[in-house]
Length: 301
Image 1 (cartoon, helix red, strand yellow):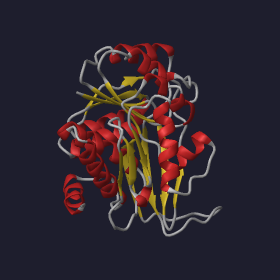
Image 2: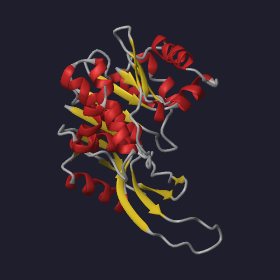
Image 3: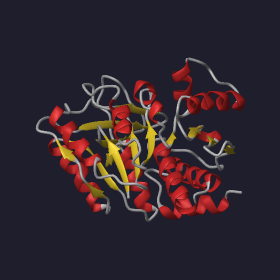
Image 4: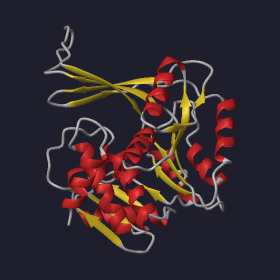
């Protein structure tokens, strides 16, 4: 079974406008409201590919209820832990000639809720996949992802970790199956500017040395590079197309890679499906649908 974890889910309120004038009333041309959060996005794209998963994490209030309702409506199983106070956050995505995001903070995650979450993790078994993605609420410890991986040591659970900064660094020693920094995140981790592919590969290799079994670096329009556990480096360019949406593209790549790896056990095939899924989201208004992923996948060399 696949489990996805989103510590700080949100309702994404997507607003399409011609332009924004600060200090004035602005007219919305079109609006959408989606359940969001990196792990949630992974579950949705997996479902679009015909693969079941269980979405978990923490929700609160009326916004939390709506997040859960939307996922159930899409056919995604949920086991969210409900917090006693506050509301799940609302993230505002302004789309015109630019993309602007205004992200909420999220509710306080209590000690009791963390303990309940740990009990959930005890259900994972050999061969399960766990996708942990995104940021955490402000009062959650920065080693929380590391603690989750530590507790899963020796149980045969394959952990996909898509996190940044200390959340990632504190977990590397526990050998996650795959991590997925993008180029900017890789630069921030090592306080460098990376101009060439060979430099990206070098610093991705350092993350392997720190413990990651596989390192997938997403490069936006330039595709992705994978430093795999088999010792090989796999590189693939993104297909041509007009990118209109960056929200969820990286999460879609994770979902595609996971689906491809589960189906074939082959890193090259997994990377190809990851590129197809990430690109399908980038080329559309929302998260990638199966027909769009299949069309891009079949057109890749």
